[in-house]
Image (cartoon, rainbow, N blue to C red; front, side, top):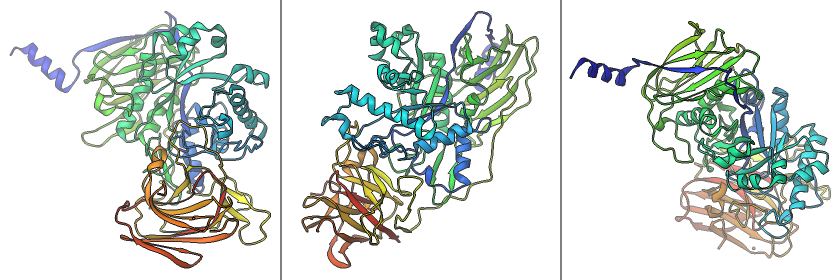
Length: 639
């Protein structure tokens, strides 16, 4: 083997021997305008546990997400317009359960938007319905047979946001005519918030539709677009992306797509599903957020790597900056983008994520190769300044990764600089000097859900409509003040959805809300119950419930049902294969090993062996159909 061959092997295996050249220049013209990086709360119920954190921990989590020059410093917040329906990990309440019902204080998305806006007054707010109350569909599981009804329903949410919370919604998925008729000309439209096709073809062919649509938004585009979308000359957004477990591979996924959504697909905004993993981890897509906040009972939260990967872009740019035309792929793998505020500032973001360390949950990632490389960038045009440098390194070998670490300022030599890039790195080089890696004292240590739990729901003026820690999976369970009841049950938790919602998910035929520790096995769960539907109504309490989210229909466990006709059942699944209404009863379910028993109003009612049920799971409450019912004095004693 000759010396050149030896040199080639050394270069390929350990380092970088020959520099590749890249030019950054604004003189030939600029690319598309940058619209920001965002997070998505909802689709569904992904911020459910966040609202139950005590201060100061809740405020600190919000700072890591939204506070400028601190953490993720997000530019965009997209929220679900609650539709009373299961929409991935839970149900979010609608502002209109019924056609003649309006309440703009249900749920927590209003609160979240205000908290984001308080930290960043310039944040872009987007609303999108994943599902709709049943009345919108007029008896059909489809919301667009009566488009005027659907449009008016969504417009009422936009108007309510302004009138009741002083929130200006910037983007929505809706009909232009209905927005304008209601004085909402400044609200822009994203379409179709699904796939590139067929909406792009319709926009090209229909001038009126083209005039109405401001942004073409696609979900999980895999960093690519289609020619029709580019030909529309509309803004192109990845309006839902990421959806990946937030370990370091998840951070690598986020790093790659934040750059390559523009490099490959000319998308100018990327929105993460989801914003913060604040729901029970054993639900579908557990920990698929930019950070994790799933223990309000302990106060523990974890600032995961995607927060700092986000900062590599968001702390050095703002919506309105413009991409240079000179962006692209590195010759030895990876990508780079460059943006300017057209006032002399320049930001360059470089990523060298390898295939196996940056796979997203969807779509499949074709094979590619990245190796260490030596790169030289030449700054031309109006760019002749010293730059700050921030670096992240994913180290999958020694497990000594570090994120968003400030380096020595970069010195330019004749308008150029050289970097030695290793694999699985992210660099930001920028003239912006305000970036910082924000920090707070460590949160409390992680702890399991408390084994003893009680709630009598006696909150006269609750700040949030749902009781703490209950995760509604089908139906909506809200605080209820029963002013007609002078007795001990004035304050209760009430299931309020009485008609199957319009939804794409497989809602259960019964309503159900889960709570607690998925590992629970032996326990006693007790609740007072009040059946409101005469003759046919029914309620249950449950334990060892093993499914939620889109799989809730197939949930197994121990379910103790009582019905308004005076009968009861004990089933091993939610499909239930009956006591007087308008009377309070106390149900108690006890499980120990393979033995379960139930009491009604303190009297033993049944006992059985339960060998064909899950070994562990959540506890639950619910109703036998979509019907009104109330719960009170709920408690759990787990071993």
